[in-house]
Structure formats: C-alpha cells, structure tokens
Length: 415
Image 1 (cartoon, rainbow, N blue to C red):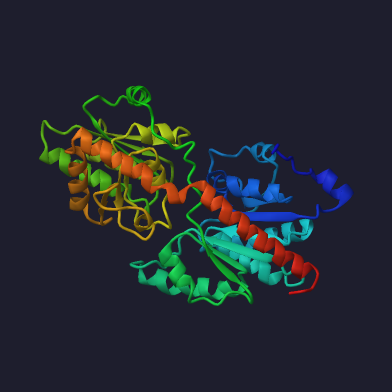
Image 2 (tube, rainbow, N blue to C red):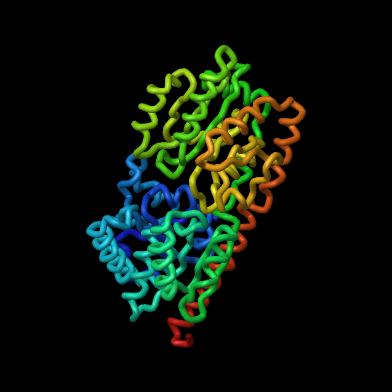
C-alpha cells in the first residue's frame, strides 16, 4: 500500500472533515515512531485518516513534523506533560485535545501513556454529544505488585474511575489483566490482551560473524572484552545506576582480570548524573554513554549480553529485541520480564535492588563456554516467536474493527 498524505488545512476547510477520522494520543512525538507505526498502517488500510496528538517539542532530538506528513499522519501539538502533577500544562492540553476532536469530527480515540490515558478519557467524557469510542492501551499500570503504597492507592483509584469512560482497554501482561478485571468499564466495554507492540524480527535478527566483529571493532570493543549493553531512557526507573555499582565493585575485586565493557543507549534527564557516577567510580574506560542511536539491532547483536535492570516494565521491548538477535538478557524480575524470561535458559534474573545478584549473573554469563553461549542464543531466538508483530497486528486489526463497529452503531443511534 502506498503512503497516504493527509489533507492539508485548506483542503479540510474546502471540503469539510474526512468521514473516517481516527486520533492517536500520547505524550511525546517519538511515541508514534517507537510504538504506533504498525497501528497507523492498519488504520490507513481500514480507510481512516490518522491524526496524532502529542507534545511535538519532546524529545528535543525529534522535531521534524514533515516526517508525519510523509507517512500520511496529521500531527497536532498539544501542551501535554509526562507528569500528572503539571496541572496547568495538562489542563491546557485537555482543552486543545477537545478542540481537535471537535474540529475534525473525531469519533474514535486511542490514548496511550498514563497522562494521555487520563486526558483522552476525560475528553471522551466531556464530549458526551459526540460520544466517541475511547480505547486505552495501558503499557504498564503504575500500581503493579510491589509498587509504593502511593502508587497502589492513587493510581489504582484513578484507573478504576476512568475505566467507566473506557470502551476498550488493551493490556500487555498478565498481572495488569488480572487487576483490570476488577474495573467496571463503560457499558459494553471490552478488555483485550496483546503481546506488546509487536516484535519486528525482520529488523532484529542475529548478525553474521563478520558483521559482529566489524561492529565491535567500530565501537572499540576488544576481542577479549565481555561486552554488556543496556537500551532505555536515562531515568530512575531504568535503574542503570545498579549496573555501574556492580561494575565498580567487580573492578575492585578483580584487579588485573577485569575485562568488561558496558554501553548505554538512550537519552534522558539522568544523563549528567550517570556521567558523574561514571567519573567518580573510575569507570571512564569501561562505560560509554552512546546516547540516542538508530542502529540498536547491530549494537545488541554484537553484545555478549544485555542488561535490563528496570524497577518496573509493562513488558519491555528492549529485552525482547535483545533475545530476538540471540543476545541473552540479564534482567530484573518484574511483571514485564516475567512474560518471557526463564532463568538460566535465555539469560538470568535478579532483583533490581540486588547488586550481588547482578554481579553473580554477569560472572556466570562471562564464564560460559562457547558451546553453552550458542545453545543459550538459540533458545533466546526461539522464545520470542509469540511476541512477533504478526500476532499483535492481527489482534489490533480485530480491536480496531470492534471500535469501528461501536462508532457506527453510535452514529446511527443503535447502541
């Protein structure tokens, strides 16, 4: 299917709103590129004009709005903030969202991220005359098992309240599904579970031996180095600090034998603090902050193991992508990684607070023979098949067809 270009504003004013309009709502511009490309294609194949509302100024490295037009998406900037406590920004964003929905006659809204989920469902509640169909994908409830008490009280109550305005609730792990069954959705509402956003195994596949050697050479990784890699935003939840703590301790305990290199891909507000910790720990020649990268498959493919130390994950695509290229994962134990990690089979599991457990996992991986590593790599690749994007795409098409039927019934006053 060829790329569709959305109507420009002059065309919209001349001819009125296109009949089938669909709005995707998130907090930042990169969310669509990371998580919603497949959904955009499905919706366009179904005949929708797709709109995307987010803070298009975030992140700073991605501000090219022409890219949205190239894939046929009408992008709208709203003042939405990631933090629910930035009330002024989010109140303004709610007003902007309602104006967009009224102007373009939006009858179906798919919202993402906690703040997007709040504003999208509030907009649906306010627009009672339009009665739009509201879909919400929870990429990981904040009231997970083991969460702080404030999360389990405030966030649980908010999600339970807003469920009343939710037609379709989409979840990505078993724990969240179990919790969601306690909610009362909008009359006739449905809960769906999908295997994440869908793993692109055409992009994430093992490197050839020559490609692996060349990539390591490009990064300055020696033949005898044990190369660890983490992929994720530089924030407190991703918990990169525990890896730095572990490496500092290992370096002290292994004088003359320390052969580990560690790379961190991603950007975020903790970058300066992580850089300070690296300097203070004397790890400048061990740890590299790679920043935002577009060659993640190659980076993962040349690593000996990836480290995924998050405090919480809804699922954790970075872990699945590592497994898909055949690189074992040293993962913290959380509801997301429990969906696919098997201790000793496709990597190792540790508690996100347990530096000793992480060190033990690294040392165990490093001591494995080539035959053991190859066998584990094969198990890694095999275990990700249920998360392939073809499975997610089939379910999302079913979900969007459900939403379209609901919208049609409301338009004709039959629901």
